Image (cartoon, rainbow, N blue to C red):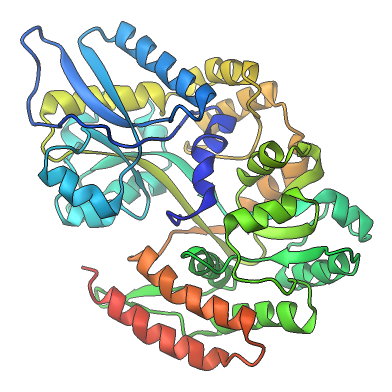
Length: 455
């Protein structure tokens, strides 16, 4: 997931909605060392992911969990910090002893961190973690090094789909319960919605701040292609492909032939969410977590929106988790693993969490964070269904089809690649005569140069 993505808001809305809480933070001094127990046998660990004071409900829940954990584990003290792992400051924090013992990462981070030995090997300490064998293996694999060892744990995942306005679908003569399942159907629906007039846009797309590249990657995946492939042990660009050409031609035709994307371009997440919140947008690519964001920010009703799986063959999926300071002592790693299991990876607390967040008027029942294998996930889903306070039938098209799609992860050096692809997306959406073949050829050379640094 792109770091500039509004999908990060899911960490306060989305994961809470699913009942397994994961909430947000920035470092505030202190240090992380290799020291173990204190003189009194108490281990103190610094952890990030504490919500800021501007999110009082999430922060209150986080603080309650810290107190409950410390009560259950009197020999462990939690020193919480706001913020997540920032690649721009990470190395300096690590070198200066300011990196937390347990720190938050996106799925695009672990491979590089492991390669640079900036995360601790936690393999020897994992045997006693409950439900470890029930976490879906593809998410655990994100935190595996080439040596086969484990360097972290996942706690959230997402898949991109289509968020759509059910009211506009109905007004345009479309069935809100049967959203598009192919890009041709998306194009057709967008034309009908745009024909409603009054400034209504059928489909909107991001193209700034790496968000255009992020979404173009998902378009390419859905069309059966790749952005990067491994060839003989080395990564190379796969952008100059029919899948990419078909994606860009579809976008070009929707923008210039159908006029179903509107004349205003160079959009990013807040722009598109505002359009949807104003009731002037039919569809856009996003995860289910976007719905509560729109509802809350623009005072809309959840029933106005639906979520469908992404058309095509595959969707871009990502997620987040936690890794450990490479200088952390065994005692700190063991304590940190207990904290992660208690706070983020504890299906047994699902009902407690759902009751708690429901009383704080937080939505429950969105199709998010399916971290576990079928038997455990089914139990978690049953609890969410029991406490659901959103119209779950509106998300059925996502639930029923998303599981049949291939879930593809972001390419290596994703953020740098997205910067390149932003330019491609911008050209197609702002220049009617954009040369798609030349754009892809030029972008492919740049991506090859970026991938040459990947080991």
